[in-house]
Length: 518
Image 1: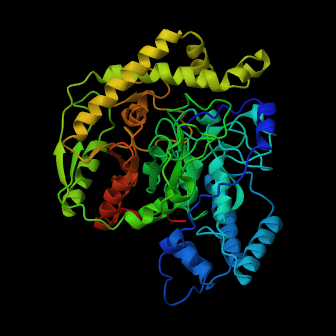
Image 2 (image 1 turned 90 degrees about the vertical axis):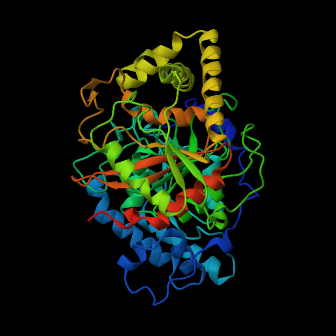
Image 3 (image 1 turned 180 degrees about the vertical axis):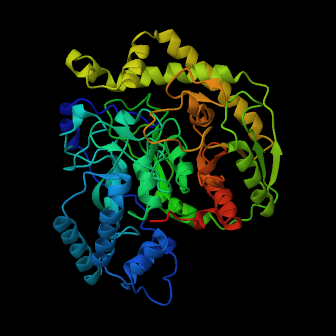
């Protein structure tokens, strides 16, 4: 579930659009591009299986043209998207090819925009895209075309990306299952009968099926983690403030959800993070670090590092049979790269963490969507889960929110104690495997009833409340061919170290080599 953008006042959007400008502190990442593959590219299929960093190198060296790239990816979308429904609001082919021709002309003139030069890119449908329909999965916004871009979209464009459309998301990003009444249901990349996860389900499936080189997503309750796990890719939830969450009508208390990258390799994710990250004054709590290239920090020895495996919090979490055993089998790969793995039992009231979450989420969702809810006529078009969240928030007092923030602080301090002994913490990315795409959410897990529409994703809440950087890394497939992942939670603001651990793990495994049979 993703951060609900408080973008519901269209007049506010229009007022803010004039103030937007592309960031001037973006890394070009020219040095980060991988060496161009040898032997040449002889077919669209060869081009599509390249990593984003490899593709970037080929474009910059002009071994392939931006027009070839655009044509190949649009053909892949035409073949695959009808089966999975991941990309929505696709822009006209003629206009996209014209932008690709312009990108080629720029290279001819010696103007290289950045590592995403000529990349086809689809933005998650929770983020504003200037002139492109942005629905947030809601019928109430099905015709809205913003007059501005979200901050990270500005940065993607500045790095050379061509925005081809949007990726599907559940209504207002609520629920880790990507369906809505505007565009329908997004289906799993590996088994179209199953769900894609969410709320970055469209983004995850688009990357996994090679309909885009990399993708952006957002994450409030596992939305960069759950769909990454279900579709066998890498998702990365950055440190709080790493990627500016802007522009918004409220810029100080929206501290649970924000945007981040998804990709088929850790290197690709690190490069996209480098483009998205960096201070923006419109987001006053964004991190004031200089622009950096996270992909240049990956090749670091992890020998001697320690990680703590928390599993299901000693039976507190309900998990589908097979999830824990699959993850625990994957832990051996950390040991292969010299990382010590310990099973740790926390003496902490985890139900307090959940109750903290309920309060803060109700509060933020009610704040973001309250203007729509205020019109009685709109309520009939809002899904029940959204109504439940908003109405729960309207019943809260200021002291309820303050006490929840105190409880969040207690949990954060508990994690800091754990980081005194460990470099990272590991949890499953989900409590269940991908389920039937026609099921809105699991009502029980292993005989235990789920009392809310999102209780089945409780495993991601500890990471969200911490504000720490988190990578979702693959843990393999079960006997039914369903993918699973693990959350790698790092120390505060140590995004680089989390990516280093994820990269070392990636090199020791073969999981990402398994691709959907399309």
